[in-house]
Image (tube, rainbow, N blue to C red; front, side):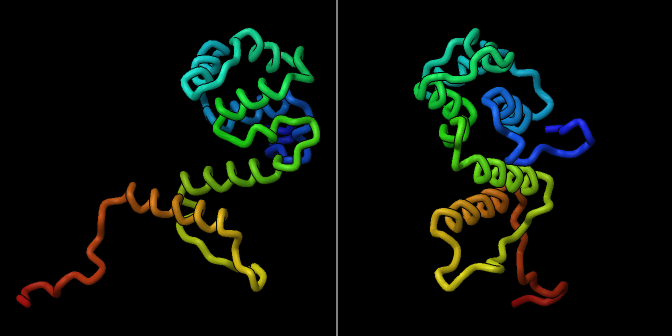
Length: 156
């Protein structure tokens, strides 16, 4: 999300519910205009409930203290931990980092995984499992390559 100075917003700049929802709309649906109705339908398809007008009011900054159920509906719609939308959230940095990782994977900036700077315990199992699943998914997007092709003109 543009910070007005040509840079992207950082997690520490995502303080209000409106800022967090705007950020998630931009990151989850890049280049798309998502209507309140379309988002409400997405939430419903994923087992939650959120009215399109309530979602629009959140985007307009008219709703600042929604119930936990609304926060959970936002989490379902965006596919992130609902605690991201809490006023004092401990997961904002994690969600933003995860979205940045996914964006870089999509653009090809990340093609492998190296565990630099980890302590003796290594990477947390959840992070390792997540990263490996993304890499496997990336491999599935590419045509298979024979690692050891036979030399031309020779039969084995």
